[in-house]
Length: 415
Image 1 (tube, rainbow, N blue to C red):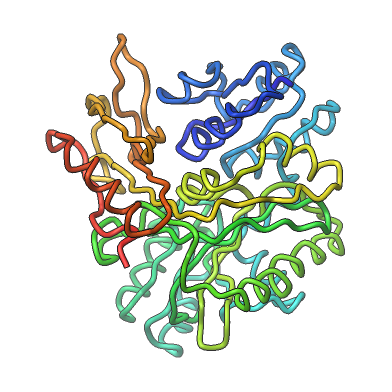
Image 2 (cartoon, rainbow, N blue to C red):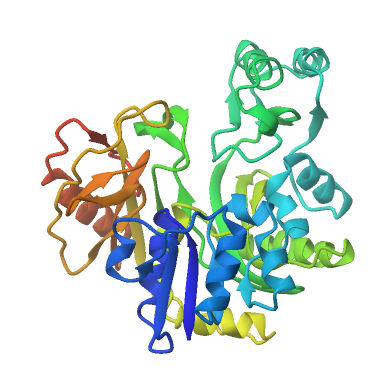
């Protein structure tokens, strides 16, 4: 098979690493890819938002399956264009991707189909939003309605922070059109976890659970980022919680999307929180999570291309998972998620049998590997226990001189 992965981040490198294990793949391409993906796939200089360019490439190279990583091309309708051209693609249509593309749509959908989630209200007027906050008090959550690269969510512990978030989104337009509408939600207490599933119409095949760490600094301090690390599976999620999440959240959502004539094909990601009343949805994504993918896929025993093929054909892929744990810690550019420099030399790592490196914001420049983003690498380990994984990862990171160019959290996967 000829296979194309669309995207340039850590999630896409993780997909490429898993796909590269398959004997069914003759040519593996990534567009545009990154400095680490170069080692396992042919990187094509086509931007992930150049949908026409990607369609043209898939036709010319007789690509048998395209797998789309990032959310922006999904919401721009990449799957719709591929379908129009008769090109196989594993990705939701623009209509189905609205579950991630609009938080207000997702909340209305959950209310309609009785999917457990936080109470909420939607606003486009700053004064009305502020009046609602004054009435409800804090803590409270303010979200930009549209796509904001994982940074459009403010968990406001004080009323002042919530009012400021409304000003930032609706008045100062810090998130541009993504923040032209805001969703204000009740604050839910509990531990978060992620549950991703391969979905085709009303068939849902869940993966193992993961927990990512959004805050920039140790002990969940600092600003929200796209994710500073993750581990899988999550020990405090029971079989009962999993069954509930599968039946009352993932399956209800897939069935509801069918009813809405927005049949879902692709990866459905439920960002969940374990409340006193059981799991509730914080948000949906309509693609592989980042950095969760980097710790979930290494635990999958199946040939990933066979999984995609089976799911698209309506067959049960019979997912098999290793009885092991996986931890990944992100090495980020100093200053992230604010402003940061690019072009810093990537440190060299001496990997052990249990460790691995996933590239996110890297590129080749004059035979050197340099930073090209906020989240630069993920250092991962797969061993029988969570503690051993974390020990492996941090021993590897401690041997590396980051020259003050990079930072990482020191508490990922430590119980």
